[in-house]
Image 1 (cartoon, rainbow, N blue to C red):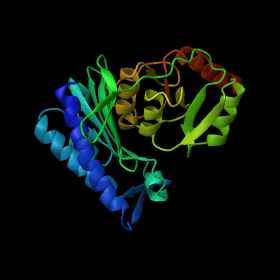
Image 2 (cartoon, helix red, strand yellow; image 1 turned 45 degrees about the vertical axis):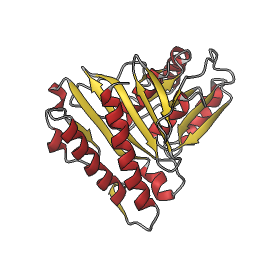
Image 3 (tube, one colour; image 1 turned 180 degrees about the vertical axis):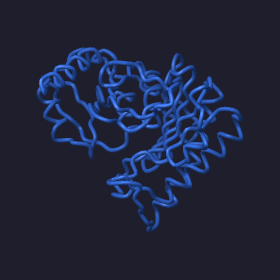
Image 4 (spheres, one colour; image 1 turned 135 degrees about the vertical axis):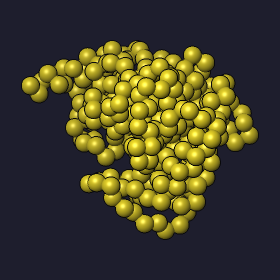
Length: 273
């Protein structure tokens, strides 16, 4: 496994321990915008990760959710960039339902190449290196390989969807394409984990799907486990541009269902014209 993947995993675990320390006691909630909460856990985990990655990989920009954008200005011209969501699923963290994660992804030459996702409330950690593989890493350092499902038909597929972003409409879409069921879940990273582990066949978010720090580690893990991850139009994410918004959605699957899901999402858009 690449040393950068080990680093990302170690740092994500450090941040996860900090997050759980906040989770274990009462905490205040602020709002950056409508329905966009932030807590001490977000800010402190962000600071920890940025400091550790900056120290261990000097010269590699760190694009992190709670950082001032001035701190990573010009990142798009770098050959390698870290994308960090220190607490993915803050709404779920506030709701105390356990569906949140620490996410660290690395993009090189505009493409996601590795990602570490730690689920603090689950006590589980996952890492993927594109071209090498994906694993769940035990507390003792054991590695369990991850593989996406082998399903080739939408019939019977289970698809994870956002718990908070128009779940009723997305669930109706899932039913319309003949899939078995939609499974509402929090945290983009954990939805990606559920695809990478083979628990579910796909994850769809047709509309805005957060920012690049919500996609990079997710994409790397799913692709490393044998799947595919694109925007909802079927196009690859470009991590080498200054625009870091996932404005065209996100679609992760076992790869075998990717084309059919892209086509179904296209028909959905056209039917609304």
